[in-house]
Length: 304
Image 1 (cartoon, rainbow, N blue to C red):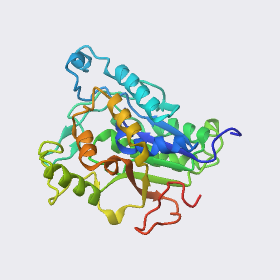
Image 2: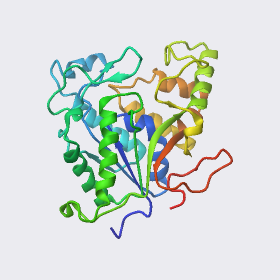
Image 3: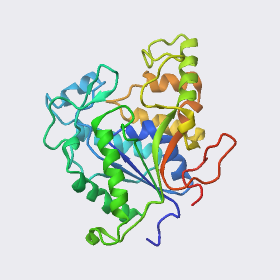
Image 4: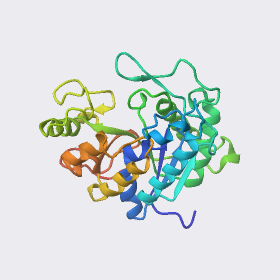
């Protein structure tokens, strides 16, 4: 790829909006720096909760069509971030949103019934092969996805983790599926994370400001959900505070899923750009580069 950017990042996410929540600021920052950013979304998000009353008819159990609508939302979000390379795993419509339900312990688990085309039911090798082809085409040095629990237990997040992990391994094998392109070894793999100390500080600021409804049930001084990561497990912090506006615009583009008076915007309003402009990661493969005074990398490409 003679015209490819020197640094190339590949992100693997489950549904439209996951990317903007987790790494929107990083994506915008790297695009602005001339780095390659490719997003792979694994499902159309058919089972997502619809927060816009006039669009409730798009629900899967009614008229349907939410995936196609969210496809447009994702395109608008990518435009806000400046990302021009976005693909659906295997092509749009290959895998459906699996849906989920809440466990009594407060995390997501698979729904009692799932569609045969649900991503949770996908053959792991088949799904991984779709991603192997992308990896070998794009040749990213860095890949970002979820941890083994998918952040909060959503089956599609867990499956995205599995598919990404397996695809990285297969893509590096010279003799594996040569029809999918020349072998490529992704140098570094990261899992998206949320800093415990930052989350507690943000919650405290909201509660002190009188906001008791955003992130309802979460106590700044009490136990936090599974998606919050203890600081000693973090590997990298990308400071992209100057791109918070782009991230907020991307979040706002996902209108059926995120409201501008919801918790994401409330946290940003009370804490400022550090709430969502500093994004954290755990390294899962590769060697870390230079570390700052807090013992964290400042760049996903550090050391490459």
